[in-house]
Amino acid sequence: MSAEAPLFGLVLAGGASTRMQRDKAAIEYHGRSQLQCTFDLLTRVCTATFVSVRPDQREEPTRARLPQIVDRQPGIGPIAGITAALQAHPKAAWLVVACDLPFLNEQTLRYLIEHRDARKLATAFKSSHDGLPEPLCAIWEPASREPLLAYLATGKQCPRKFLINAPALLLDLPDARALDNVNTADEHRATLAILGDHRASSPGQSDDAQKNNTAALKADGRSTGAKPHTLRIQYYAILREQAGRSEETLDTTASTPAELYDELRKRHPFQLAPAQLKVALNSEFSDWQTPLRHGDTVVFIPPVAGG
Image 1 (cartoon, rainbow, N blue to C red):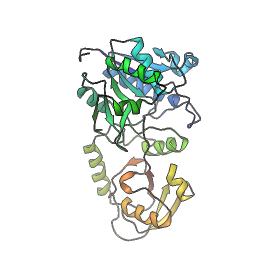
Image 2: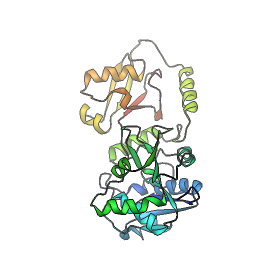
Image 3: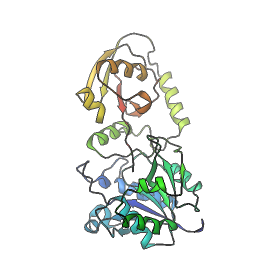
Image 4: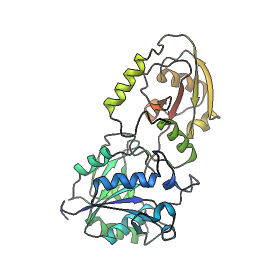
């Protein structure tokens, strides 16, 4: 198939949300359900957009008012939604996106579309965490339908493993956190802490904007000396398990998040290196060298892998 195939959008919302223990599609991060946010994103860049649902979800209120594609083989994970879409509209290419990506932005989707290679079975991003294909923010070409169905017929169900062995174009993510998904209550709380009540640092914020924010914070008079100050530190996911607590208040002379994390690694059996973490300061993504001041709340965010 050529690049003339129309590009349709598909929001994957057919999961059971077992680890979250609540419907991930209905969670609000940006003032409306995550399903609606993702649907709106795809609507801005696709010819038509649909929601992937299980048969028993068709009348669920969050999903019922949106155009749907119903899984033909429910219970086999995201590949059920992908193949159902390819069968429902076999002449279309599909931009498939999971509904649990609160940091995803339009710029990331447009970058994927601009670099699409319709000669391949798919165009996908490489995970910023492990370098493997991200099948749940990817363009699946019409030609992928039969190979995917044949893959399913062998009893295999993992779209990521399919892409590893398929002719696909893999792109580096322009925004390393754009595809961080949220699967658990801990990750949900960490995400809310990052986004903040005032959304001062938006998911679509550019690197230049973040640098400007960092410069502004430094101009805000933050102390860079060795005078002790009191910080509130919050832990999520594996860091909470290793620290044995969800938060603590610490008097420290650490002047930056980098110095603080070095100090915390001497107090707790943290195994993740700083390069594997992101840092948020007072509900905003921050630079590791941003000066700390008395009363700051610091969150170190462990990686979460999509797909």
